Image (cartoon, rainbow, N blue to C red; front, side, top):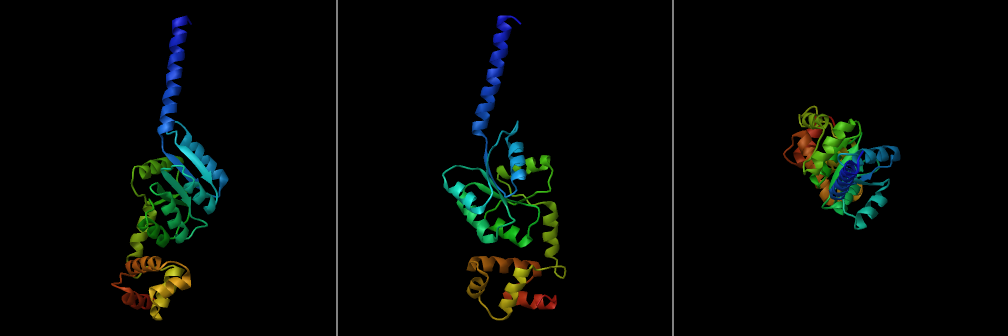
Length: 228
């Protein structure tokens, strides 16, 4: 290799590394909040690989996630494992992460929690059962500002709205039962340990599942379906 060829080759390599470095500096930053360290590290390696070169940070507990979000570090997306979180904690992360997007990340999720989380600003749900290729596509989709709901969950939601096939979860049945006994939203919120607004959101979804016009009608429909 002559001197000119060698210099040309070195220049090309330098330009390639400079280009990758510039690209990495401008790429989205993603916080993965999951207590499965092996999975988190595998996902981080996948997201950081060429051609995406996304920046990632890992935390394994809710306090760590909240501390990281409060540290001033800027994120574009938070992937939030649901296994140890209730709706209150999810909303807490959504508020702490703003304006970053927060996407639920779980192999199992209650439809009620999923839709209430979306109502409060979550960007949908990414199942852990996805292939790597599909996972990367969904991450890009969410980063573009879209909300992702798996087809299986959307189909289940439509079934839930079908009347007799509707099934309320344990918490929803408890709320309807307390409503049937004359409890108001504030009283229900105190008993189950959530905000009054959360109870209202639960009741809205209950009415949707039962095709009920209002809370009184929801109680009537729940009785008809043998849920009370």
